[in-house]
Amino acid sequence: MSSKSKIIIALNELGRFLSQFSKESVSKDDSVLHNELFFNGFLHQLKISEEYNGWFSKDNLLFAVENWSALLNTDSLYKWTSNYNFENSPKKNVAIVMAGNIPLVGFHDFLCALICNHNITVKQSSNDKHLLPFLMHYLIKLVPELKNTVAFLEGNLQGFDAVIATGSDNTARYFEYYFKDKPSIIRKNRNSLAILTGNESKEDLLQLSNDIFQYYGLGCRSVSKLFVPKNYNFEAFFKAIYHWHPIIEGAKYANNYDYNKAVYLMSEFEILENGFLMIKEDSSYASPIASLFYEHYNSLDDLFKKLEIDSDKIQCIVSKQLSDQHLLFGSTQTPKLDDYADGIDTVDFLLKI
Image (cartoon, rainbow, N blue to C red):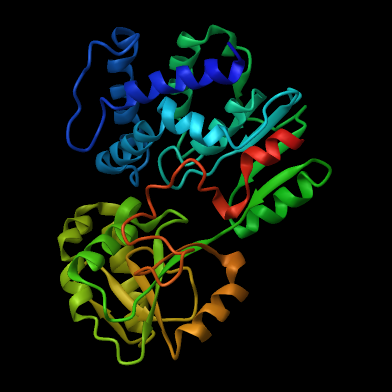
């Protein structure tokens, strides 16, 4: 059996393990391999993650786990990897510097390096350091030879052949200097947006609310900006998103809401708000937490030209099928295995280093 097939079989079992933990229920399945060793332990890691990071609510943690459990199955994994030639690809040492804005945000990079059979050194964010090492222990139980192929490091990275690093625009400048002599993927700030025409249904807008509020809006795939036609009426939008009003019960979110509202009011900015979200007209793509920026467009053709120019600032665009390149409302937070961040094919990069 090839190393790729062995990894895929193990990942399929990991997917079965993770399927026990969902927003709907947490239920033990005795048919899952090694459950007696890992089920309660993972529950504990979820609890620690929630206590350690105030943004990692139970719902957000389970949402992330549930999405990965849906992707880690043999059919999806074989279909994804069938697009690449893994034969004769040399084993290299790959360093991955992970962000920590949402739970398991670096798992896709880790998965790509794992499937390419590289040695991996992971430098995690302090905000998200509990889940991935535990899941790696589960994989090692399934495939013992993985034990010496993955290391989690807190100090400086050394002895690597290539690096994947994710951070802000500021940290990216440091990454680009520090890793200038190595093959690299350096990810900067990107934001996601929605284009509305006024013809959206209530269901469309309800699904859009999930793109906005899931993970408190902290992900690069979280919609932080709306483009709307002139004289757009936000009444239907506010009605459709209201089911998310419990989000204001989160202390960190509420603190950001209060702070940003005070700033807007003192600055005499015009805002629309409903008690848990503020909407402000602004040309920026990145809106503060508990805020959503919007901008008017004169024509869709002009808007598409603008977005093409600004493509390096944009992660996802959602709309009512205005383009084949746009995502459906409600789908930004459930990417597929071949939905690569910044449009850079990570597996192709890792096979060519």
